[in-house]
Image 1 (tube, rainbow, N blue to C red):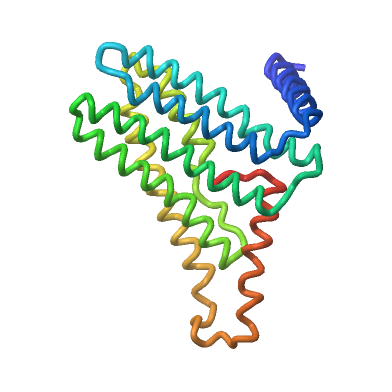
Image 2 (cartoon, one colour):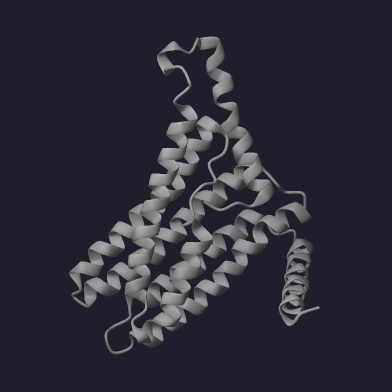
Length: 236
């Protein structure tokens, strides 16, 4: 076994022990999901209170906090399955809270640039905030129509990893380039999903021509997509 394989096995063992301990408490997976949001708010607090003097240190703290919040993202679905608490609402709630977590982190970064009088990066951060939501929104709307839309690279795990890297290395001014990367790749992902949905719906009849009796089955892929999302834990 290679050292990377051993490290992965050790992390898996530790994660399983954490999930087992949480399962014994019978805690609701929705509570774990919400706690992840609370921890991300703490990270946003560090970002927003940083200044040109202490930005490196405060962003580093925020990056570490986001890593801690990621633990809750990893365990909530596993705890749900371990305690037989998997529900359609749980998938919905997890998706909504993830969007809030994204927004609150970008809002903290936006406040930092606003306090530092960097208007260009205030606008850039706001743009990245919008595109990050659009990445998730385009997938959700597409999957309500065509069942699956997993195309595109810049999903939530990639966004979080980039934000963590930008935060941990802000002492070298890395957050600004990270925002540019997020802006470009998120926009490409949105365009890719729009194009993918277009090519997969162009053969369908106009909505006005779909008989009323056939309208209900059109919504079935949305329900199936939510169930599959909960089972596979695929973030937007």
